[in-house]
Length: 105
Image (cartoon, rainbow, N blue to C red):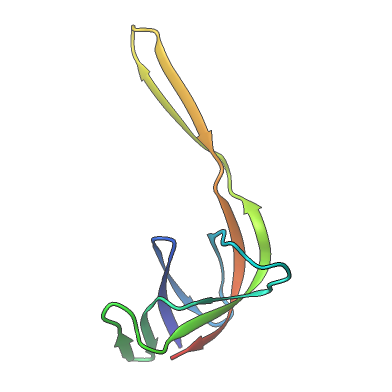
C-alpha cells in the first residue's frame, strides 16, 4: 500500500517503512509519533482512491527518529557588475526525520 500526502506545501509518496525528511513541527514534550491527515491519494496495486482534495478518513502515521536537524546551508548572492553592489545571504532549514509506521485508508 502506498499514499501521497501533503505537508508544508510539499507532496510525499510513501509506503510503510520509508524514512523521509519533513519540515520541523511544533511538538509536545516527549511526543514520539506524528500523524499526517492531508492524504491526497491511497493506492494498492492497480486500485487507487483519489481525494477531492483529500481522501476522507485516511491518515499516515510516522515515528519520529530525529526531531531537530539542520539541513545543509543554502547560500544566495545578488550583485551588479561594475557598480560595487554585492549582497550575500544564507539559510539553514530545520527538519525532522520520520519513518512511516502505518497507512490508514
